[in-house]
Length: 473
Image 1 (cartoon, helix red, strand yellow):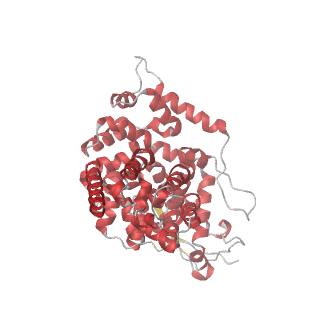
Image 2 (tube, helix red, strand yellow):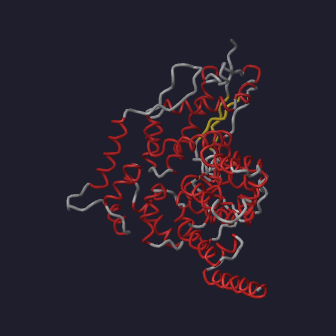
Image 3 (spheres, helix red, strand yellow):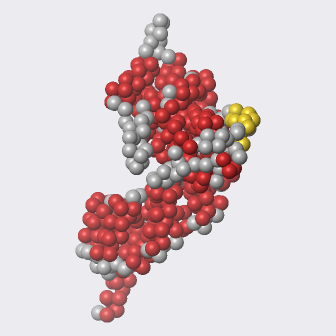
């Protein structure tokens, strides 16, 4: 085998706008005819055939991406760096994933750019975080490769004692007292905000990194930032319980740029307090994740103004996977004849439902009762929340009562909002009044009118019925 001559030039990378750490990366130059890789049967690229200098550079890039990702989840710089340094097997796994995703680039001897490396690894790390949550650090540190090449690489959960010991250590840290008998300063600060020690212990048990947040460097700046946005002090405990990672997010690198980006999309800055209270995780997602969702909404035909309103009313749509959740749901509703853009605007939360567990069973429910696909599409088009209701607790009992009412089933196509009203507090009492009066009202009139207007319409119908009866007599 001919010896490949390598010219290495160390070039300082600039810090990318999306937050990749500054690292010194060796830029490598290889004679094209001497650079080669061999793809395995499963489609991956073997590490052994990649030149050592290039492999070393890619490992450094992977370490930088992993370190930054861990910091964005709230870990201190020291903890993030320590975790990365102790996770050699996981770093090898990340590099192997690069070679698998971009095997065609290696086969022609082209080196990956920093942007390509980051774009390949960050979504993968986010998917692992979504799957494993607060134990991700333990899984990364205890990562092991499967012995069989043909099997996909997977994370192996470490023994329970390892995870539990780290949780116990973190919980102990937030509750330990100093020489003067006082709790740590950051715990006292959180308690002053209205959190109790048991709450803090519970958060730490679920998310051990919470115990290591710096008061002056992390927690306090984030709290003051949220208060400036209009968040009430009394709401902060609820926000931190829902998303403790928020306390560790960098203001300059993450929170402020994300907010600026979302405001440019049309998110109403006057509504930030409500948006964050509804879904505090919004500010912890990467810019790339937000852009993927926005690009999808654009693709569906929504205007920038409409996207801004959707993100204001339903910020948790950012958490839905575009490929696994949003796109399949959009295709399903299209098959029913629904205008997806309209449905997204009116009821974006519908797109967070399970296709198999929620959406298809509701469609089957109406099909079994004689409705056509076209009629079902019209119903969901007119009332976007229809598919968010439980079959057992909502649709079935209300359908059963509807069968006792003097209406044809086509009335539900005209007014599917029927399923949104309380059966015991609205539907039954009002229909009883109509039956008692002996008059006929549209289903829409029975349910959608205010009590005052309903009373007026009912009295008017009764008066008209009496007048007609007097004339006939």
